[in-house]
Each structure stands twice: as structure tokens, then as C-alpha cells.
Image (cartoon, rainbow, N blue to C red; front, side, top):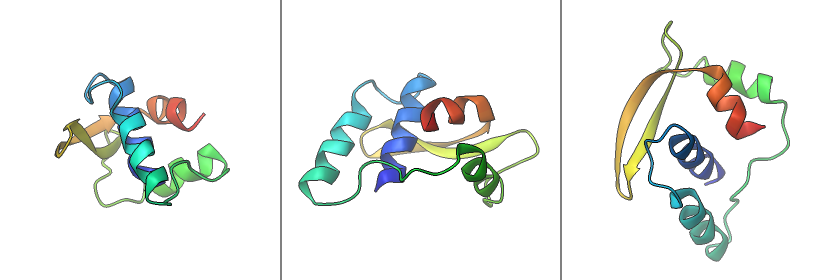
Amino acid sequence: AAGMVAEARLGEQLGITPAGTSNRIADNMKKQGLPFSLPRVDPRSLIAAIKTDKKATSNGLAFSLLTGLGTCKLYQGIAEEDVLGVLG
């Protein structure tokens, strides 16, 4: 659940996901008693783990990002700096 919120924030930061989507998702997670924020982890360690994902390429990281509520698209070549901006 917390990963969904983080990915929505990444999409918002990149101009892919409509603004406010991550807050809507977080609010719904809270109502359901699910975690809505990532635990404290070293962002570089998390990036290293993301690089092992089957969607990652030599061009950068890949994420399935919301283009609207209920719709998403795979985006590849996302820079580590953009992800770090969300994990900050």
C-alpha cells in the first residue's frame, strides 16, 4: 500500500499522474488501516533493490505509473534522482 502512494507521488512529480492522486490513495489506505508511508530505509538501498526488478533496463528504472485513477502505463528510463526525490 505504501508503495502505491510512493509511485503515485513519483508520477505526480514527473507530470504523469494527476496532482492530488497520491493524497487520495493515502487517505484511502488510512481508512482501511493499511500503511500509507514507507518505513525509514536508506534510499540508496531501496534504489539498489528496485534495480533488480524485472522491469528495470540499462536505460534506467521502470515503474507502472498512474495516468489517472484506475489506469496506468509502464514508463522506463526513469532517473534515480527522480526516485530519490520521492524517497527523500
